[in-house]
Image 1: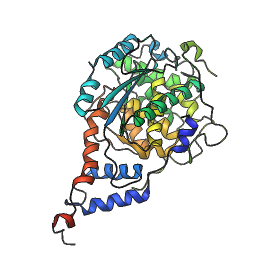
Image 2 (image 1 turned 30 degrees about the horizontal axis):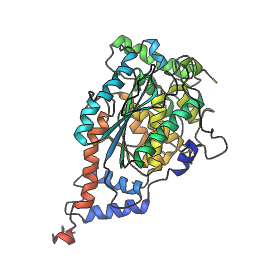
Image 3 (image 1 turned 180 degrees about the vertical axis):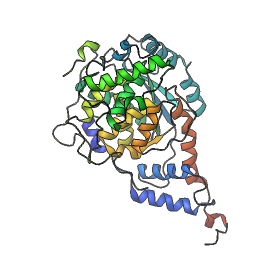
Length: 404
């Protein structure tokens, strides 16, 4: 399915299904509101599915999108770039934290190479959708060309569609890419208008000097790509971006070298003030291409693909949050289909969730990525929906309700 077709299929939550879910919550044998945020999760999932009670969000499927970043050359991470490739091998061998958490919650794990800077042998559980061998250096100009960004988006859409077709009823975002928190911070600046110092974190654990340098690189990236120091911000469009004639066609471009990427309550409202999908003359897709990584674009497509299928998507940390900003700028209704699994210790993640209007279910100061926070949240999402299916009403249980 192409990007254009997917955007056309993303629908807002159903107000009637949400109203039915709230009414059903009020009839269950518990005090109203006693399950706190879990009640709203169930209501939101009913709206997203268009039916109350919503389907159980299981089985779950985790997709880990892996790619490398040209900005790594700027010294923003103490970890060597080859760790991305090595961690992909670790995922495939079942040795990562994400594998352990996935086994605990019964989720499948799919690893997708969308831009690792090296060759990966064919392996079970690995999908090769390589766009290029890493992005260009975003601090010097666009990280991707627009056709590359579209190719990555459509790779994510394809993975989501395939997992849903195979029976997945909940999708969980995962990522791997050394230096990808730098690209995330730049995207968050652009889409929220926050200053780089407020959204750039320490990633895999950097010292004060490297952190200050990383902030400077994020600001340099914004400048090099013609964006103001605090981003635009990009208003969300009033309708799916690309519904007019300006949407690009699908890209069939295959792997290229990084050097080829050269410059060229009710259903929630749009996460930012309504607009036409651009600000300062920049379209969301251009901003994604300029500042994002291949895994950011693929995760944005993965989110869009899940929403188009009306299957809930649990977002992981700051990488997923920045990708969700891009997805929401392309199709605002996509957020109706998302659940914020957790709040990362990375400061940019809180800014992204605030902009999107999403409340995280878990806050354990995680900053690993891989999909770990989303996996931990999955049992809570299932529990929220299970209540709608299994808990008796006051009438059916013969329990006297509280006197009004």
